[in-house]
Length: 168
Image (cartoon, rainbow, N blue to C red; front, side, top):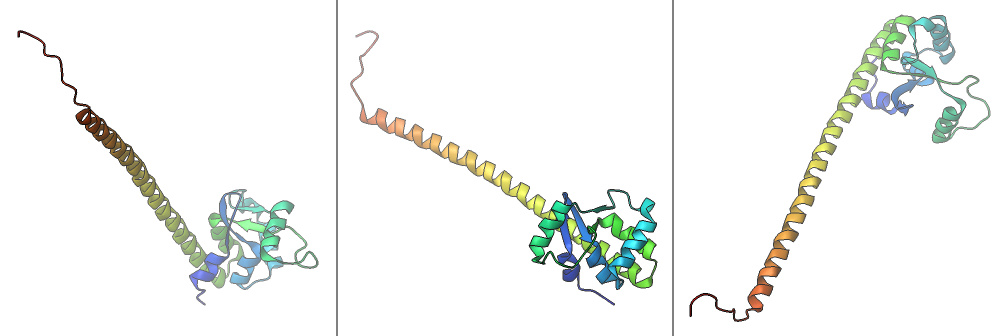
């Protein structure tokens, strides 16, 4: 069972400045019920420190729900769990099924690709900033050259006979 990378990457969200996946999306990918996934995580809480998994606050959940466009009625009773890349890796050990292991490996590869894309785009942004600085400096230098040329033209136009100095 191979899941397209686009589907996995569409389920990665940026919450609390971290790239995470939600429990319901992971349960769907692992082909288990969300309730079962949460139960296994709660039984093994020592494996999931705060940097591996956290529960969304009511405000975060409300913001996320407004992005999905779902209603208030029905749906989840508990706040969703958000899993970081390390949390996803730990989930495969907790769920301990062949599907979970394969899907976790694929998810971690997608997380790695996303990280590489962000690093590449950061490098491009830095190069663009350097070019902008150079262009700004070049613009200032060109203005300076034109001001010197204007001064030279003014001096040439204002040629008054100079007083001779020295012996006559």
